[in-house]
Length: 298
Image (tube, rainbow, N blue to C red; front, side):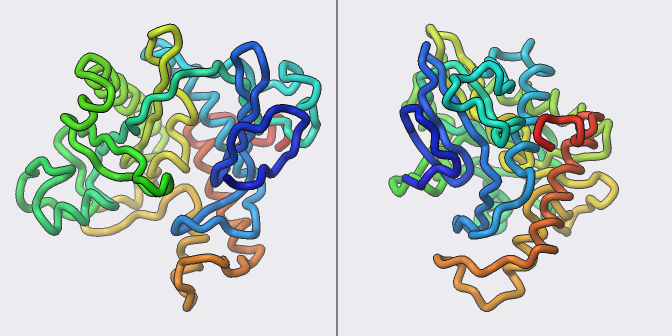
């Protein structure tokens, strides 16, 4: 387990590549989204300024906008509402006080375009997650309909492992798997429509769910640049890879290096991390229509 970016006088539960989670009492969790950035499954030594605040701000926007589709775990993003041990000015804008859930072991991916690992599979076998697709698709083509493609964590806990819908049923039961599929597709459709009106394509995305008193609840983050592929609509065309609104400048820089994509990471130039910051902020402002400078801590 990774060392947390912010050490608080609260029970520490978990630290991942980006988030630190603490027990806030009263069946609530405190999630802190750091500015850590990982590329090729390696966490860089240099943070990306405001990245954690952007992810928190955009998730809060979607949690509110899509609350009629499914309940969510968010209680507050205000540091005034968290335990005194976490009421620190430097946490402003990067915290989520959330309900504690029974998390489900299936990650819910929805694909509206064929790219990434789905494109590699299609090239090899004309399938996506084992299901046949029409012949003649090109890289980054829009699919006829959004497709639910679940995954789960591999044994190493780091990499996602694609599974079939039947395997998702085996993991959580038929009724819950069907509900997760239907809710994920509706969240994607609604979110993609909003983003599309603002010039951004959501190529694919990932949702995580838990249960609260038996009710399905969406958790973690929703439709962010880290959990989704955001493409500028005016730069999309099949047979190409549009630039994404996330850490693309970091990935592009790393690809120019003779680096084996394992620890230790190389040093990132300031202009590369700032370019990534600008991409994240632009995604937030374009999708929400809000000014990031007005978000706490920005």
